[in-house]
Picture 1 (cartoon, rainbow, N blue to C red):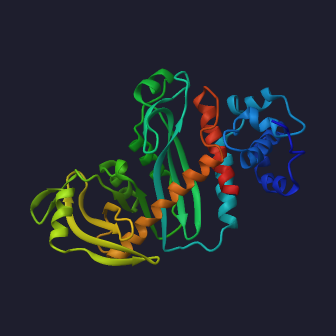
Picture 2: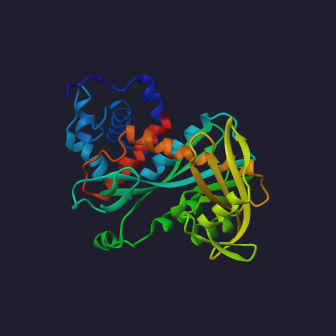
Picture 3: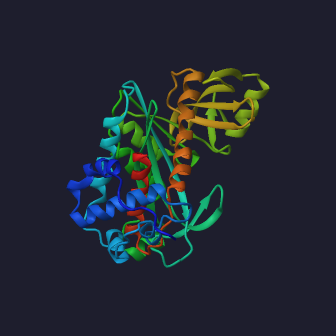
Length: 342
């Protein structure tokens, strides 16, 4: 690769100067180079070697490697300052409702010797050797801010590393506990993997509302009868219980029914079908007093974390060659910071 960056542009350096107090002079220089490199690198070029080769005056690559593998700085300070920077620059936030969106994303790896790497399921790649990050996104009006990133490892990998094993649900619960509310109502959104007693209990403990997708084979009780959710869907269709709901100019056919769910308790099931694609979404929520339109509108905010993952992948999420899981996690955090700054 032919180096073409002569230095850190003045405006970029000014922006990054907010992070200077957390770093020594050599660390700050590596931080600036890494952040700019993540922003401008091409596909498959977001590793240390490729970032170093972007610059005309290349540094000793071992210095940049040690910035990740032997950090004498705290990545949490950098992440916290990045959030504060974006919040200070954001427009007026909605003080009535905010969203905490939780999901996980898989980053394919190829060496089984990489720490915390294991076989994880991806909706696009199938079951692959990979790192799996439990992530969250803070959404308020037009603001979509990365707000949590934790690396999952199976029991064997955690035992090899000598750390406590935590399920993805456990990591999601930690993310909920760490949330700092900025609006009167916080609504947590997640997919069917996280719709369970533990996450619901954490939301209840903090006074947050929640909406989660559900698998069609889950058991619910409606009007004293036991149903699998797909059976309830068929029943509602036969009874003509669906009505048209317009949200942001899109038409959805939706139905709502109050149910009891073992281990979760009383909740509402909302089934929405997009009129143009016929995609069916089975939702469960404690927003029992909200209208169909309101619940569907809230639930649609979850797609923003899918957009975030796509953009983070473009910025190099997972494009690292470190064996150490701490270095991989630092790289992932800096990708999220680059996303925030852009």
